[in-house]
Length: 159
Image 1 (cartoon, rainbow, N blue to C red):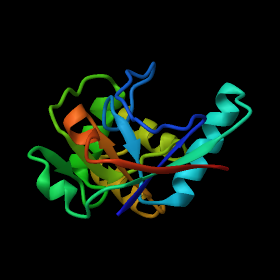
Image 2: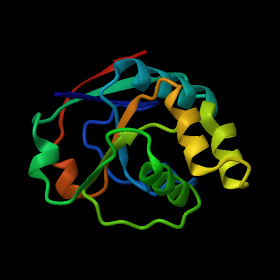
Image 3: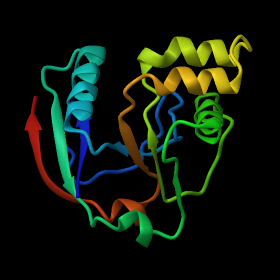
Image 4: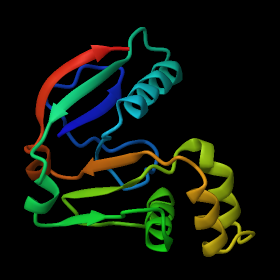
């Protein structure tokens, strides 16, 4: 299976870097099965830091790697457990010991819905219902060196 990572750098050897902001699934190396989503992430990062270049890094991984790793959390769709997990991570309240986490991306276009939920305006059910009408790309985050070792770098393509 191919996984993609959008960046302003070519990343042959991925590592876990603590971000200066809280992310959906916590600190980790984030990938997606969507070339479109990775390209979008690369372009956003390029604009955000005024970089001259943007890349989609392409990796190969065994199709069964999520079954092989001992400690994986998967959210097959946007549901209450997924919502609580990402909200807690974005608040910096969630700590977990997962090798990988796979689930939908709660991207910045959904920020208003998440804000309404956090402020108590929307219930969990209403929030999940609103999120399901959006096309949600997937993300797979790697949280330790053991998991990262499953990735094999193929190439980096400038976008």
